[in-house]
Length: 496
Image 1: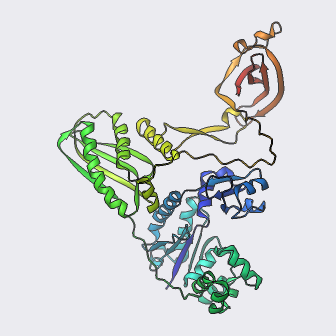
Image 2: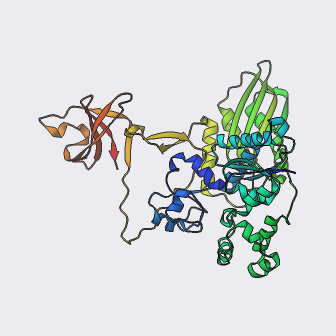
Image 3: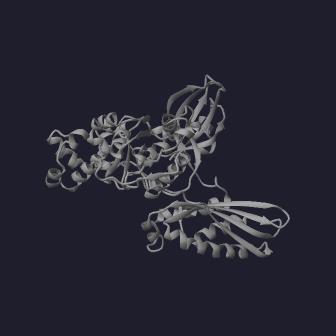
């Protein structure tokens, strides 16, 4: 019997790097929460090169690298990613078991699929290609025994099929124990005995391991030796949740329509709460009398079972919809995400945090004004200041990363904010007489710093600019430049 392992290691870290591809060459860590002394749970290769390790606090790591990026990955984000990966893998096998204790690890049943895909090598390669297209670093290994396949997957990338059981045992025996995610204390204790690889650990008697190093060492030995065998427990794909409402008699009053939707949503929520599912979006199809169909969609700020909140989003969405005819039938597709039971308990018990309230406010704006109504600026590489940022739609508010703890007790200076105009404002030529009138209402120039030259654009349209910071008599600090191509002065922005 063959078994396959698809491993997306350090899933939380990979989610951060997928969201910030420009961070890949910098040290990046995932922290437990947004406190300065929060422990680090994942580090990338560049961070390890700076001696940053798991378990270290963010403040300690920041002292080792000024370029350090840190992010908090919420539990529901990881669970949503697992669900998305499960959906991506489902076309390749009907039997898929996500390992919730190891986010990003999946067991797959490859039996009978070689006739569909040609052979197991081609099947494994297509599974790996699917994960790669989703911008994940992953490995896919097909073999005979779960512990061997798991160990090999932890040290390889790409796709591999091991048909010889003896070769499989030899490859897994050479895997270093630190690649299996065991605790650092147990790893250190075993290293004192010279035990650093899987094969060396399997050569020890399990009874003595349990006495000397405890249950963790014994459980690891049982798993790697195959004594803790468990059959594949595939997860069934979640069927789409669809509710329908017959509007009798047909109606075009928004309030009455919302009341009917509220009733069917309440019935659905009872079942979804028992299944630990949260509603992420509602896709509504309105069947109009003699005029076809109309579709509307709203998205929640986070997976939720708060019916009043969802009805409020629907009300805001329908408030901007003029129905040309009465509605006679409603079909509502409910999009779901797996939610931890603790999250649902918080939702119906304690008062939500301010961040959650802000995310709900954003969801209301998006429902009322459209999906691109709320945006935030993101930096990007560009040689011109006005091209150094762009606006992206946002779905939720996150706390800023905590700054590094200052090494001295001296108060830090107030930060300067550079406000960049979307379109530079043209200035008149610098007069030779009465220079105090040059900047008009900004007042006379007291000091001028520069020039700082920017040149580029030879591949499209060459630009050369000389930038200056100008302090005026009114206390303003202006950011201006002289365009050497146009031979004109422009006001680029202000510094507060």
